[in-house]
Amino acid sequence: MWDTFIVTPLTNLLLWIYDVIGNNFGLAIILFTILIRAVTWPLNAQQLKGAQAMQQLQQDKDWQAIQKKYKDNKEKLAQEQMRVYKEKGINPFGSCLPTLIQFPIIIGLYQSIIRALAATPLSLLQLTRSIYPFLNVSILIPLNSHFLWMDLGRPEFIKLFGFNLPTLAIIVGLTTYVQSKLTMPPPSSGPKDQGAAMGNMMSIYMPLLLFYFALTFASGLSVYFITSNMLGILQYAMMGKANWRNLIPGAKKS
Amino acid sequence: MKLKHVILVAIAGLVLSMLSACTAGAMSGSSWPGLAADETTAYLANGTFVYAVRLGDGMETWRYPEKADNKRLFFSAPLLTSDEQLIIGSSGSDHTLFSLNQKNGSENWKFTGAKGHWIASPLEEDETIYAPNGDGTLYVIGLDGSLRWSLPLGDLLWSQPRTDGSLIYIASLDHKLYAVDPQRQELAWEVTISGAIPGSPVIGDNGTLFVGSFGSKLDAIDITRHDIRWSSPTKGWIWGSPAVDAETIYFGDLSGHFYALDAASGEEKWAPLQPDGPIVGSPLVTPDYLAITTEVGSVYAIDREGKIVWNRLIGGKLYSPAVVAGDLILVAPMQADFILAALDKNGSQVWTFKPVKK
Image (cartoon, rainbow over all chains, first blue to last red; front, side):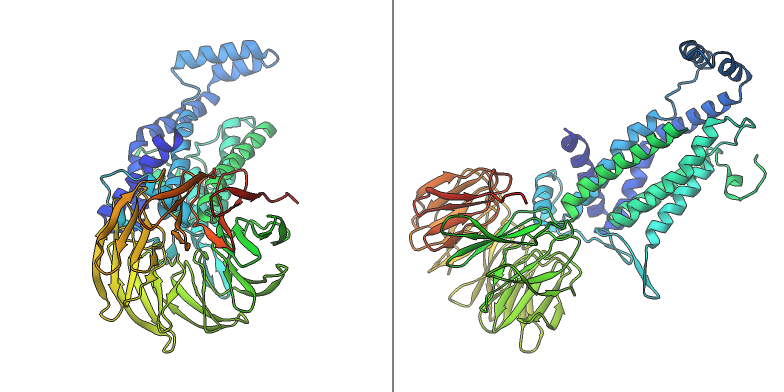
């Protein structure tokens, strides 16, 4: 199921792009990511709107009053929260549902990149079995996994002064940090602003997590992460939702 | 807030394990086993271990290394050298080529100069090891493990080189067959064919090299003119190396057909046979019959007239070619209850080997 509906179609799409653009796998991953981002653009927009609505709700006086009033009655609190959601037309899962939908795409995308690179005989045999007839794979194989200075099938390092510098992993960490900071809404004055605390936490954990992924796994995944982050930043900027001030340490919050 | 930290860490762990799972399989060298044998022992490269198994009773005599190291994965058929070394390279994230003592599995030396997976078995010729690597380079190493010279050739080199005593012939997935002059330490010539070549070329009697490819053709290449003498189309991609026996070329393809062609003309000797599944491994030539393995897990014995002598379902998936050792035919299945099986000449199972967990 997973293979038939996620990995195989993504692999074929990736190989088709690779074929069309003249056998450049790095460029194929970038275009592939742009395509995936374009398809999931409405989901991302919905996620951002949902997150902002939830953030604004934290500052709502009615909401704060409910929290205070029913702090010892969780059942009643949940009922009241649902009432407010309904009244204000907010979907409490509006921010996390799109992320959950994208999660299989990210995993499938990574698996399709790895499958397409086919680094071992068994993986090459599996690749030959998952190609749609319209692709002339006998000409495409082996895929050219070299892009700029990288071998996309391996983690990337640049040797500098005797050290292996993981440049792509650093860029992944930085762009993830920038993206998460830009999308962080301005915090409310309340010390119990859980949304802001969560956002702060995410802006630390996510870059570290993706940095580790980039450090450990095939650099093709790093190319995907960087492209995806850049497009995310672009989308937020185009929607006018990017908080550029968040990037300046000590800057006054807008 | 602590709960949220825990949830975040758990999600991170889940993503990490999912990515690790697909990465470990694909990038770190999950593949089918490699098998070699001498008069007394079978040597099986199967994942984290290389096993030495006694032919008499199918019992393990040694394994290398003693403890599994996931960075070192072994899948190529080991090379057994004239001075009783066993040469095997790692297909894991560690790209070391090892020399082991055939008798006890102790380490003789290591070569760490390659950058890619060791998928191909090396070749020994004139006390020299010719070892093609996944980084596209042919490494030429002395029997003491010292690098003599190396030659960057093409893309992925996945098959054992062959020699006619003059040149070394190496097939590549980059659709090329390379002829290397070991005296001059340089490329003598190369020929481009219609697809990737995952199997070894085979040298015929009349100055011809035979190679199968993903171009769905078996090509006969003229060694003196360096061009294609004839091509024979097949129904599927050819993975394994063909076998030459007298005037006939035998090989199978991924569509599950088994062919016999006249070496001189490329004409079919008999209509292709259709065993029960795709054929990845090379045919084994014995005095009595040809033995082939299929993905479905069967071994077929086929006589030279194209008649099936016997067939036996072993189980699992058989991608590695069968190997003859004395009176036994050895096969190494994937995804079966055992990792090595010995058959007698009539196809009856003599023993199976399943490693004991240590």
